[in-house]
Length: 389
Ligand SMILES: [Zn+2]
Ligand SMILES: [Zn+2]
Image (cartoon, rainbow, N blue to C red; front, side):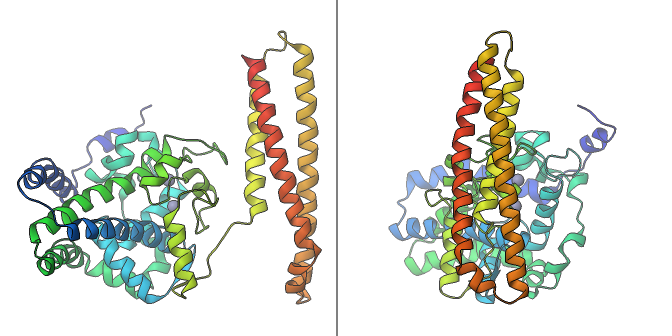
């Protein structure tokens, strides 16, 4: 698909600082790093600090830049914000202000070819790194959507002194640590270079692979996917289909078995008073979204089925689906009634009592009904798919 603006895209000037940075680090990884590894032994301390900074810098992007600043999914103590600010700069992914402002556009315009700064519509390479190598129109800076961040002194301090902080964190910190352990070269190679390149690509995967590879249990309205394998590399941000529909939740992997170290770090920080006002989407709302998606799927599959092949079977599935739709409407109206009651209780300042009343049990029962319905619908979709085959 080509549009009038495509020629402007092709002529977009190179973004030299990014081109030089990525060329130097990639070249270093392909030449200096293997030579050094071949001719020297890395100290154990260098490996330990490599892991510490790998997680520290990666989760300052996912927990700080992303969930705290871009989405305001929780609030943090200034001391935690300073750690995020320093280690985030060490990731070399631009200042918090620029990163968060662009990310808010990504959510608002997701997949739009001309407006999403890392649109998946422009291909895997573009969404991974290509978008940074030229000054594309979609990356034009405008902080109108980040006025709240401009009032945060830590954000603005980093923005004004970004280059100095980034250089200090990337070169001086590994060198000083290396000097303390007597392995300056090893620290520069592992904590400096290898950590930088790996953690950059791991976080870039969230814009590229997490929009291509995986399942869509909540919505197909955008390209974002849930992917357990990707979650392992992206500090828990592999649950991107969930994230795009419930972006204000401080969690991305909502189930206990889903790998989301960023969520665990934030919850841990909350326990010691460094994070507060953690936002969570109510379980009912999450399950309702999953059932809605299953209902759509079942309808899509049934529409694809060939009526002449098995007319009786198809009619039975159709009836089942209608029953499920009716059941779903009942659950939704019961939930609305409960929400109304909750509102009235709040007005009479009885919210706490209401939370402890049998209303809680009723909500749990509704969540359970949705869970059962989700299972039945999955089966129904499968049967409809067989009828379509
Ligand atoms: Zn995304
Ligand atoms: Zn996001």
